[in-house]
Image (spheres, one colour):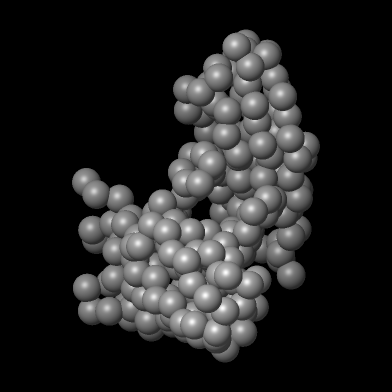
Length: 111
Length: 112
């Protein structure tokens, strides 16, 4: 059974204070790892897909990286508008191409 | 381009009733998936449809059912509602199986 564990559960940063979120996963065969951003009461917003170890993707202040066991979402010089819950999900190569999500990391950036 | 749309936005039902939730995918997307998200948890997979056929089913009771129509829109039905069915129900669409999924705003279901 696919499993995704995200840490920390919650993170509070000052504006401009860089940090990283972790996503550890167990999957029989990884098709893809996905990062989403979710604002309260809204649907998840797609950020990145990573397919193989060593791959990196960047978007504004966010950079996602992937190893064989985990993924990191690095946030450089965050702003208050980056406050949200960040979700990580894996897609297994075998069987259905559905997403298995972690519980998310709730990020709060204070001005 | 319009994103994934879902209706209704909010819904309040009583235990034992049934509910139908609707989803329209992004134009050109042929796969629709349904997820349930309870407070403080990540979304949990319920169903996946591709080209009007069920391609995946999560660990949910038979009270949950779904279908996809020729225009690729989809319905999620839940019978005999329980208090524990209260959640945000999310629909996601993708071009095909295995592609990234784009989520709608969700339907907030409250069962009293």
